[in-house]
Each structure stands twice: as C-alpha cells, then as structure tokens.
Image (cartoon, rainbow, N blue to C red):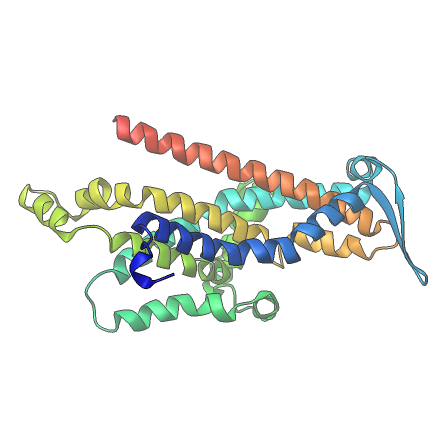
Length: 296
C-alpha cells in the first residue's frame, strides 16, 4: 500500500496501544508463572498431598484441611500469627505512612544534595531483602539501644495487655526495619508533591496562611489519593515480607509431616482472604474519610 494512502492512527488509539503493550508484559507473566500455581494451590488446599519416592499422591478431601485450621494446634498457632499480623498492620501502617509523608515533604524542599538524600532513603529497598533483614535483626541492628536503656520495653509490658503489648513492643524492637519499609512510599509522595503548583502556596501565603495551614489545606488534600496507594502498598509489603509470622507458618507447615502441602495451601488461602478483608477495610475507611473532608 502506498504511504500516501495510509491513515495515521489517532492519538487516543496510539495511547491505548502503548498502555496495552505495557500491560501485556505483566499479563503474559501472570498467565505463564502465576495463574497455574494459584489454581494448583487451591486444589491442594482441598486435597491430602503426600510426597513419596514415586511422586506426588493427591487425594481429594474437601474442606478437611480448612476444618483442621480451627481444630488443631498448628491451625490455632497460625490463627494467632494472623491476629498478630492484623494488629501490627494497625500499628505499623500509620507510622510508615506518616514518616514517609514527613520525609517526602523535607526532601521536596530546595536543599543541596537533595538527589543524594533521596537515594539514601531508597537504598534499603534495594539491598534489604528478607535474609539481609533477618541477619540485621539477629545482630541487634534493627533496634535502638536507648529503648532498652530507658526501660521502654518493660513499661509497655506492664501497661498494655499482652495482645497490644507484643505489637507495640515489636515496633521499638524493629524500629529501623519499619523505617526501611518507607522507601517506595517516600518516592510516591515526592511524585505527588511535585505536581502541586507552587503558585497555590504563594497565593495562600499572600492570604495570610502559615506553613501549618498550607500543609493541611493544600498539601494533604493533594496527597489523599497517594495516601491510599501508599497504605495499600504498605499492607501488601508487610503481608508478603518473608519474616512475617504468618508466612513463616505457611512455609514451616509445607514440609511438616503432620500437615503437609494440603494444610499449608489451606492456611495460605485463609491468609489471602484475611489480607483481602484488611485491604477492603482500609480502602473503605480512607475513601469515606476523603468524602467527609470534601463535604466539610
């Protein structure tokens, strides 16, 4: 066909093609490496899976593995780990989000070596893998010695009930690690802050607004959507962390003689359901909070 007869694609069509080409990479990877394991684990959760010298023997048992979660010691231990995780999410997610917002606001200022400091705060995301963090925690690099010297841990144990004392104390025991989880969130908030027109702050300053009023009336409303993204990312990041007690239970039960792949797959799916419920609650709370602020 002659070049003169070819019609150029419209701009929106070109943009859609570019977008779908980017999404197709993830879709192909999901279909090739994730979809089959998902259905396999669901089938295993409904079966008794035995590893032998002749291969894998699978016997369909229905909901027996799920009933075992609520009737065996291994199941009760897993449920306690999930409860501890839910409490830790309730405590750690606000700390990580607030810390990320504060650091993002500071790093968005016109200061010298701003790019260097941004790289420093993001560096733990690159190097702090599960085994690395485990070694740092075991060597005591994740806590602040002043916490032990001031007896803060003992005060927490004496003040709060055990259900709250453990997650609160774990914050001080792993304070450095918790702050390391904020690298991606800091970049997200910096990207959102850079989209705010500086003339809005100048107009607010002319009207007599101080830094505090500008932060709550201009900065935070502009960050509300990114706060939701940050909270979702943080919850998933904590939930999939290799040292998460629930994840550890799933891996330990996988090769245990009294449980095996079937029971491990069952608790993994229950963990997925709990995580989905936590994410749904977080989205509903943040969405309703944003609507109330817009009404006011």
